Image (cartoon, rainbow, N blue to C red):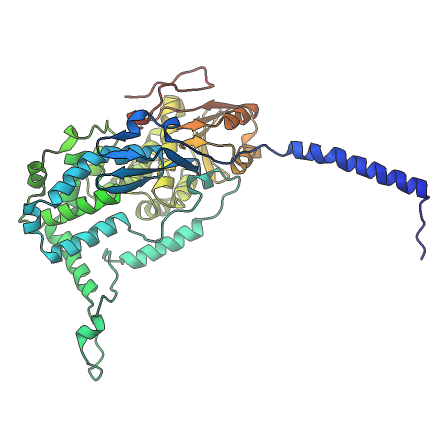
Length: 480
């Protein structure tokens, strides 16, 4: 079958027309693509106040990398280097330094050395490791809190469930936090017993772990001593600071043995307590006062007043990345907000958090809503939007809390804010920290009211900026 051919002049004209269309469409297509930016490396001084840059016993690296909308700081201290993946954590690490030096002096005192046998110290170090790393595999995802600004929820739920199951197997039904694994030279210790009848061998770690569990639960009151020491120092007993956790756990373990007073050891090296650190109410009193089990029961009761799924409540309280301190903060914020709906979906989102940074993002986000809206927030709705969450007030305003150090207008952020669910109505975004010029411009063009350095109860006072910028005509003062 022969195809008809166009006259040469007509074919040439069509080619010219097609080329013209392509040349016109290319720049217009590029123009419709959203303008975005990469997260930069910036001077630390442009993000935090001078008091956080250096002080007695510490210095902060002058350059800080912004990754996942959080600033990742490096500190040099007299007791070793530290990492702080946000402004809030940086402020806490620096606030812990006086207590850390007291703990270090106490754990190197002659009284401590005399009371601590090698066996006790070995168990104390194991306790410190378990307290700091209850689930080794939960180390965080590369994007950190940035994954909550995706336009679609990446289902970490199955992953979180498998990690939780792994933790359950590791911790065991009896609460024993050590696996019964073989230690060094275990086989040689048993000798040649190949002809002996099969029997269950108790490895060195099994014996230590079971003995340690028995001591903790029945005799030594390790958790009580640890919380009391943390209270006297004014620090979080569940701090993620490895230098604090190691020394605090060791001192508590030896102090709970009965022949050594951990409190007197602190007194002997120069005083303790709230006189050293002014936390300004950042740590809830119940975290120091209640045992982990009692604290969990208290939080369960409060959650039952705002969430409906009791099984999900139990799962959240026993699994995931939230320390008892962060868990309590999140529960208290929910109790204050009293959401009319959406609490169960929010708990599911919270259970996907991978590590302390993401847990803080969610808890602090609720704190931003409560502090900014005050009584107007009560009885609204928790919304799950994409991979993040927002709040809808009773009068229909959507409030998006972003507990980040600095928002950049990345490809991911551009896609998140242009979702259909975020295009209509009155919309406000509360940013805990700052935002780039491009991010502010794009958000305003999309119709968002933007508040940077938004007030949040119990935010570190030394990390706040005095020049709070806001598009809102209403100034919200930081509660004392």
